[in-house]
Length: 214
Image (tube, rainbow, N blue to C red; front, top):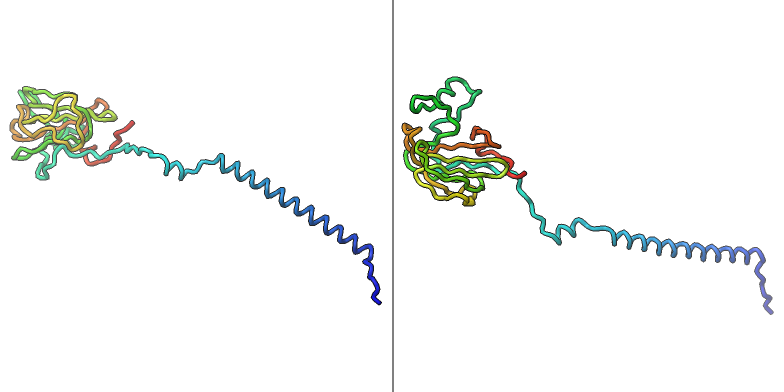
């Protein structure tokens, strides 16, 4: 005959304690999990990903600089007379002076020469603000560019643009020729550059990156 074994009272008490702790810890973990999930959802709802902006929008990129071209494309063109630089040596200054009608005139640009007629091009994008025929300078074209630059192309034999035309960098605007001021130079282009209303040495800008946007 078998006898029934009774659990001692302290064992039953321990079982109740373990059961209570299991229920309490389980409830805490479930509550914490729900809370974290809610926080995560809020963060995701309020957060905008940079990749989404890049992928979903076309953002225009503005190039604020541009390299100023030479006002010609023929590689055989050379400099006949340089810009008059007040800081240059006296010998260089003498070679940058023009004698006309009994007066010595400081060269306010650069004269590019070649025996054959060559194409003259716009050094930057811009708008033609003046086209005229001058008795001394020959045919003249002036172009206004962004950020205060104005270029002047003189002694042209032919002109391919008119006032208010929009021109692009490298576009042919005319052909080289002659004028009375530098008639001894023969076929050439007299090129001048103005920066914010002040005459400037083109050599400081040509083939260099310059700011073309405000």
